[in-house]
Image 1: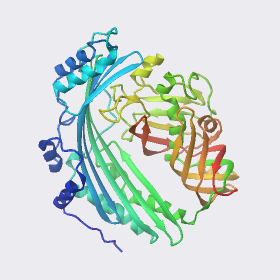
Image 2: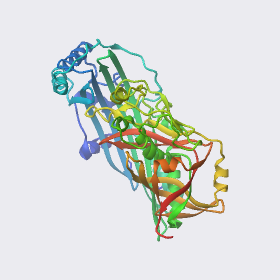
Image 3: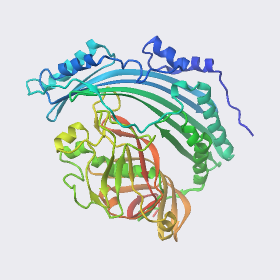
Image 4: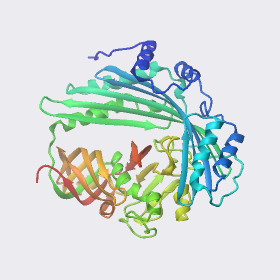
Length: 508
């Protein structure tokens, strides 16, 4: 039976959105464009600053010295709608724009930003940023000119041409599918988010780039309740794409995956504790490797001489089964970027190959410090932040084993289907992660669901004890935090087995 959904006319919904929390209304023109869903200028409003002005800003930034300077202009238009317990709870429309100016000299960075993109404010930001480089040698900046970068993102249905009724329809379909899955599904929460980010990058090497990145994020949470036990689950999809994302991943399929976990875990027993073999299912479980191995491979810590992988390029650091890649070029994925926020072309970077460390992920600063190539990993959260080395789409390459054989050859242990929160020391790689969906392995079969299990270990311990890697690589979207900044990323892995990892639980 169809559950009642409180439907809201578009005009009424927009009125509620205004009352519920409009983020920033930059100009009346921008707001009219947002509400009317009319096509936007490529790159977004606020990014049309004349190139000659940017040349003057860069020259001003280097006037007191410096080896490198850049200007980053940004404009973001975002929408978020939340539906919970079959009711639309809130809608937020955000418009944000501004610019950051940076000067680099040696290991030091001078940086300033402005929320208003005017020539006066840009020159003032350049003056402040240049303070760090005063009385040092300087370079002569090259006048900026347009550059070409390969694109890995295509859009069939632009977000600014999508009526709000279609967004609401998608959410209602997901809510209905979740509630129809099983009578024990008592609640569903649907979170819809889209964003269009325009950016302009210009630097003292003469680079000038301008593009526009769309982003979709759709999350379904469901709660199962059988009168005795409850379990909250989450399923999400995210792409750099237009609204056609929902043709590749229907809202119903996302909702049913979330509901399946909520029901499956209602019968969970307390997890055992101790050292045991762990089989991890393909997909978002790759977040463990992202956190425990990926962060220690980001070159800013390496340049400081700290971290588990410092000075180990060319050395064997993992089993021969283990190959790890960061690739910002995979079409549409959440971590895909065309080029990073410094203008370096995105690329495929093999970090560890068959257990041998090949290199690190760099931005311009760390590449200079380590005398390494730029890998396209200089990313920033907004114009208010400086670029730092960040992952894009990070994953373990496929192996030769069949997932069913990996499970069947594991006499006993823990089968981890999904992870939730955890913590990692980015320098040492020591971590603990909570398992959201896990099962006992008994005689090579997945049996009883268990709750309260945590994985505890170190990055070197994990990658030295992987002895089987499947041929079923899959990915999951996520949000990565580092240095007070967040970034859109994807993590992935095939099914794999880790021999002897410490599992925390509530019974022996």
